[in-house]
Length: 223
Image 1 (cartoon, rainbow, N blue to C red):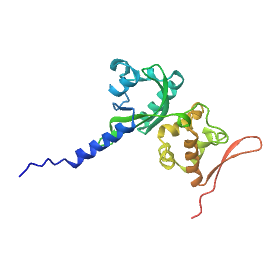
Image 2: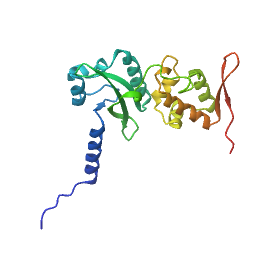
Image 3: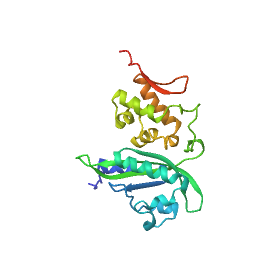
Image 4: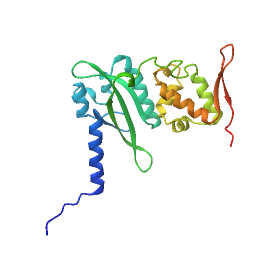
């Protein structure tokens, strides 16, 4: 009788998942629980940074100067709130050209709920899909809605940042940027629309008086 090699289902699932990730991601990365990135061959090939240069927060040196502070804050916010990390930035590649990437990451939790590590990917993006500073406009998203209105609407509903994140399908870091006047323009129009749609479903509308004073109105949905 011939020996038959039986592959464990969990091993097969892991191999399929790894193959899929490799097919779509330019970079696969991991980080420690406190947010310090680990040495990664993918990142080294892409940027030319040595392991010593990219370790910890050194990878930020490969980010375009105009995107660096926004990227740092998005990452710190995700780590602080243990939320999903999702942002766009330009990377200085090994050939000397800056290219746009979408970086996504999520915490891997132990059974007690503490973060064991972070795992994420960088996806190459082009054209209209990339982040552009100032792309929030009157036509694309309600830029007249202020961060103060969003915070007030949350308070009126008794929602935490995490609750708005869940209702809108956004990361906690994105909600934090929506509520920060200095960073609100870094949020894509589609994500603004998602946040305001979540409020609308719960009966919140955003208003302005003839004098331009911002306000909110709450009309609970009819059962």
